[in-house]
Image (tube, rainbow, N blue to C red; front, side):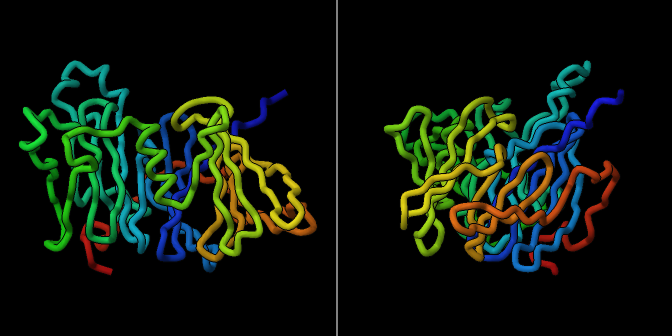
Length: 289
């Protein structure tokens, strides 16, 4: 009897000021596809595939959804004889759903890497720098391949330090509107919907990094009823205030009715097939449409 195919895993980053999102579709092994999601029309643009690891917890989307900062690694290249001359870990900025680097910075293994957007033209880089003292911190080293002059790159920490993955992800969650309850063990994260009638809770129950398994639940503030969501990957309120979540490679809209969730499938990304996708000309420039 043939075994059941393993579903892909999904992770989503929502833009803060536009109806756009980026979906990281992981699978098969070593491969991740980037997909652009228009949350207003629920339409999808399939983007490029990456062989290696995209550290989704260290990635961010610009407020207008036009740029993405990502941290990438090709650990399998470390087996090669000339591995020391190959770029195996780096942080880059691209135009999703494509990965062509418009700016790039090398990292020291996987200790540092990633960052976030302060605004559409200010990017904070999580780059470790060895400085003699706090008053003499060198700037972040960014190779600007095709970047507008008004774009500024800044260190994520002014004293030359950097965040490890979980610390950076905690910072990103707070910037995305989540609040941590440090009195819970494990820590529970909470995010209210726009009219504050429901709270969405997220708790890590196992795993680490891209393989983390979370538990999600909702609480109705009118009657204090709490109920779970059939999801262990990602959930959030989108820019329209809708409950959206992923499960086993599928994206769902959760319609809340009488303290129950009616799941409406928006997309199934399991059938996506690995293929070569070239970046269009506009994805190789900072501003061109």
